[in-house]
Image (cartoon, rainbow, N blue to C red):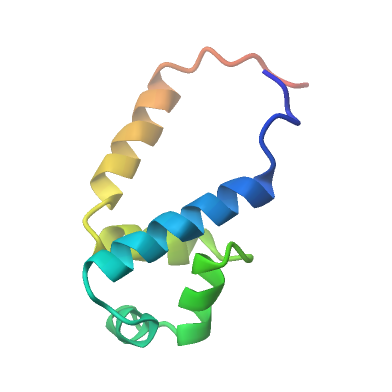
Length: 88
């Protein structure tokens, strides 16, 4: 596995694109989503543009869009099947 194959910036941008697509698919504005999650519109804007966000923000949005369970299952599966070699 190459550590340089995928850049963190690219993943954050794809996450942002995904979150934006889900939000738009539900016909919500950034302001409406922010209000529903007790966040600022700027926080949602930052998430969608791939800027630095907290894991809490990401998890709140995933939960709001009923995607937290799938994310949790994926992470749990990866943790259970951990065949990764330590980098240290």
